[in-house]
Image (cartoon, rainbow, N blue to C red; front, side, top):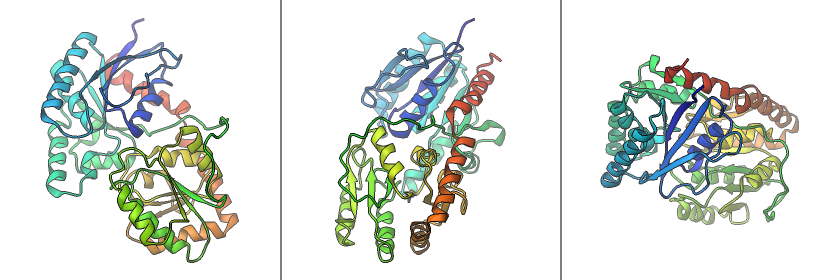
Length: 376
């Protein structure tokens, strides 16, 4: 039996890179063949299948930012690669991969599954730029593409803003493997044992400045420490964060980790009291899913992705992003009520095992691939 060939078009960085690797390493490689078209300067780590075999890769000028010449070159190269490979289905990831994948898919008459992993228009503070991103999304919606959203919130953005018809939308939640045995921690702990944590680069999306303001309010009632992981890459607001730390007199209360291995991230989350997210928007954040898998209650802003993972009053709290006072009060409540924190922590793990274990959920994606490849 010939395997169904899936071509992934992607700018492979951050959570988008994690998303694709979790798919290729867990999907049935006797039934599906994956190939990857990604950027020249994104990942240097080979993609592998469920048996550890290398997956065929092609590289081109897929980048994060808009560049007309480079984007045209990337589209032409992707066309050339896929003309050779003749995939049964294209899975396009993120905004840039989505545009290229949908254009090439339309040329070949191949169905495209599009996973934004947080729509690009959510990232822009500029109204004109945001409107342009929305126009691009709406221009390419529905024709030969199906929105494969990572959360119900992302699905609603696709319908209400990006112009997808409800019948052209599916949800396949971001999922991870259970976090069981961990290798010994390599990073040296330079912060107190009593701490809270987050994973997120200083950026408009992650809004670490808000977290620092909340921490300042928490410290008026409870002594704790904040560990921020993932500071190193694409941290366009790092200077602003450092200035805020000094302005709020938090120098001894915040640790910024430039780079942290995935194994050490898990160790740090596991030993923390609870997890925080002050993000303005998400797709379905892996860091919060990981906190659930590690039995951590979370206090998060009420944005796409966060509200899908945290059930207010069950495994954490979901707070309006401008309500710093309430956010601080809920952090204080969890840090001072051990029984409540323990109950939320147990519920966090239950939420993970029921909904976000990729070993269970990968079958749903396999069924989706079968359906839209026309091979079922």
